[in-house]
Length: 358
Image (cartoon, rainbow, N blue to C red; front, top):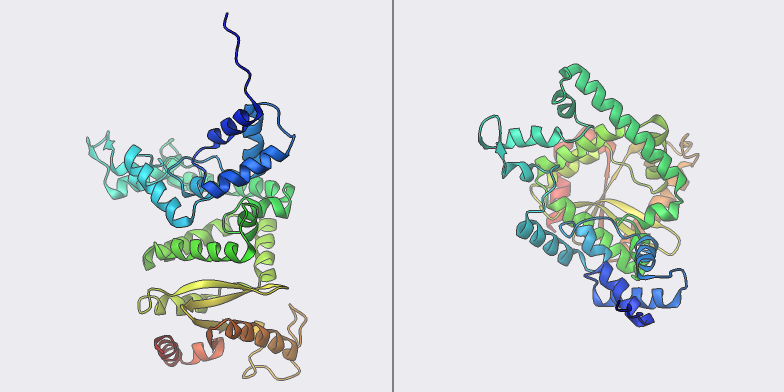
């Protein structure tokens, strides 16, 4: 019987990294140095598992952008490779419409139409009423059942979120600074990548699709348990960001005229980060709600915000710092007040259009 050749330490390291596969060169070196400097693994299998857990590698296929981003590649390359594998191997998810459009509907013996594909896709997901209708439930019962599953999922997600530390939660999301810093990027590079991902993701959808996404997000939020909704809202307020209906209306009206327009520009100081409402290139439009920003045309100098416990002067001082910081970074800023927008929407829109065209 032939005796197995014992692998050298370097051979084991190479085998571990080969198991991860498709690593960007700098990422390869980073992981090699890390695994070489730790004793928290024994064999190749344990070493591979250790790296996957330590660096939060998502359990995804090559057709998923996250697969490539985790391995150190930039967003553009990740998107290109994911599309390549989808086309080459047909690696579409059964939860996507495209997956079913290529298949034969057994009831009609022809390919699924877009409407049929949408129903079939939803029938794979217990959070959709179509799933329960396919199992024989009535429409009313199916809607109730789907809502119940959503609520249960929300509770489970809330529990998992509470059990994980804030650091762990943020290191798992490519939309958080910690995710990129853990992968060797500077904080500035991390924020650039996050802004790029958010912008690319938003721009890839039509205005109609964006409205649908916002509506679905709101429905998902409303189906979450009360404690989870409260936690999310507190997090929004802590980050200084909360979208109003009028702000959304302003953005959606301007978007067809300025396709490069986007929301949630993040700029970070040494002490904190600021999130600006609407932006395009070097222009920022801040939509200020009368109550939260203490509109001087509505409130006098004795006003104190009962929610934030801040006086009108403290609110204005805080807002001025935010605007001054954006200007120091080379941005031009236009402030739109809720009162003005409601009073004369056309005039306000005209002011925004003129500002963006300058």
